[in-house]
Image 1 (cartoon, rainbow, N blue to C red):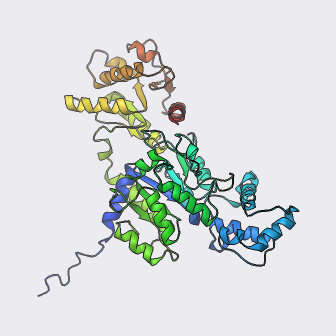
Image 2 (image 1 turned 180 degrees about the vertical axis):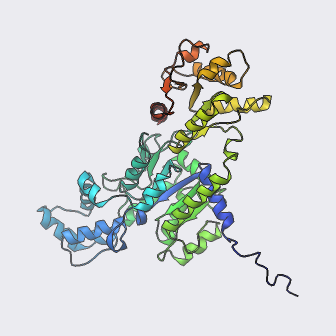
Image 3 (image 1 turned 135 degrees about the vertical axis):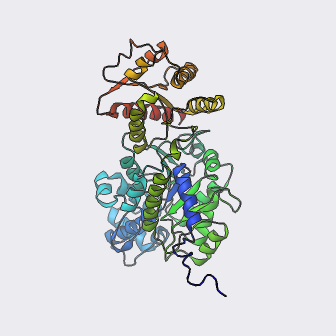
Length: 468
């Protein structure tokens, strides 16, 4: 007897639910690094990717009889050299002249603005401000443009691997600093950036082989970044490389069959079957029948649902390593929540507890650990602080911990940034002298925290610049 007959208990089940849940969990924890390839950077007629568009433009301008699909095909065509020599009236033209042509294309800001705008997909994904660290496998500065637009108000860090160990292993140039948490807005060019010297960014097959060889060598690769990437979830979009090349790149990023975290790759009709088999074998998520655009749609939707379902959980316990720690009186919960939302909507990782965490020595230890590891401490001061002057409150212990930490730092470090309501006598109030030594920013009844946000961003950028 079929006792399941007529039951719809399996209707609506998503066979990929666990994989999507794992991705969303990694996104909200800040553990996802997008890897954006040339196939999704821009939107060109005929579905061309950015490399194909540049090559076809060169074909047309030089009036070449053949049409090429790769830079290697182009530079090894004798007609390319002869036509370029004729056009430039330079008989000493070599294959390396292709780098000069590409440099010229991206050295013209007007040309870049007209022809190389970020695609809607890239702008939407990065505009979520959930991915501060982004890797691009293209030489074109398109992701950089999208990140600048998404993270307005924050300094954008740009790092690039150029197949030169003297630069590639140097923190702030080709590698991240030791202990970097990868939360500063950053674009990392995995295969170099244009404009650049010949062979210092990838155009040809030989360039790619040389770069991959360096990426796989412990003597030449960026160690700190590779160490971080092995535990990051990689979101691969627009990386339609051949089977062997993708495997090279995957291993370059310290991903192997025994990695703790793998990633997701968007596949299309150009993805080779053997590559699909390989990625599935090492437990990489390849969403069924979903384009890159649909994957971004799904991420947006699922993150929104996750946030709605975990509205209360976000504030349950203190977290370490945040950008900002908000210290406040329970009486100022409305102000603290407004501040939390403003900072979070601007891409900052914020510690905030709307229940004010009363009691429990172990819990107090966790709060102090959170203050010790945060980058900026923001205490809120209102008339309620004066009304509670005779009462015991946790926020006074938070002030004390923050002042102790500030004393151990250099005077250039802007760690404590107080904020007070209009009319609060900050410099005459009954609060520690150490707090009064800092410039406090006022906010009015409309709770406009624009000045505070700018001050926090400046402090975070200064810290990132110093570490870099």
